[in-house]
Amino acid sequence: MQKDFDRWNTDKKRIHASGEIKLYREREVWWLSLGLNVGYEQDGTSKEYQRPVLILKGFSRFVCLIIPLTTSKKKNPYHVSAGIVDGKEAFAIISQLRLVDTRRLVNKVCTLNREVFEDIRKAVKAIL
Image (cartoon, rainbow, N blue to C red; front, top):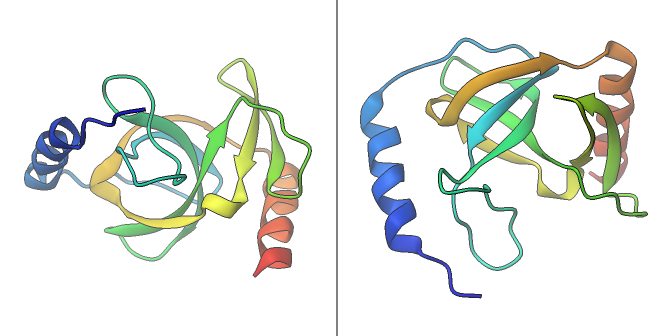
């Protein structure tokens, strides 16, 4: 599959130049401009290269640790149930954990239940 990195780079320049910083909290699910990435790294979907993500940890107004979400159910230790998100069963892809700039945040979807969030955090700690 051919990836259009040039189009993503145009979008990335716009996101970087926007300077817009969103306020977020841990446990929240946001649509995020994840982009078009190399190889098996999780990409954003649709023409905007966005994907829902879980905010695992905030480090500052400018950066946070996120876990991409998917609706693909896989039976492996790296796909952990995130419950129902935006009306669909969702799974946290904990192997794709990454630090992102908060300018990538698009809009908040919901806040995960504390128990579900703690299950995901425990799964992340188990692989680190």
